[in-house]
Image: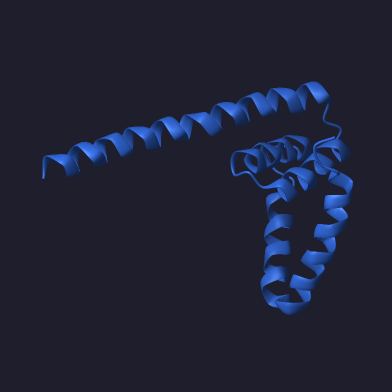
Length: 114
């Protein structure tokens, strides 16, 4: 096992609870933003959780992965749906690196010319 994801959620719940006590207005606003993002709309709840899970992977946020894996499971996502979503997350993790690598090479070329 790489990570005990259920334990991570328990630990993070305590940490987030402490943060909520220290910054109640900010955390209330964050909670409201989450509710708004998950509100009924063109995308169903499962799709929204899969998108959030992919973003968690792309930004390398282990607690985000834990929470949104849990959310995807609660929304009825299948292992196949999660795997396909992860394929897209892998692609998007690499794609931006390609784009930034092009910027880095251009920056080097411009600076070297000076």
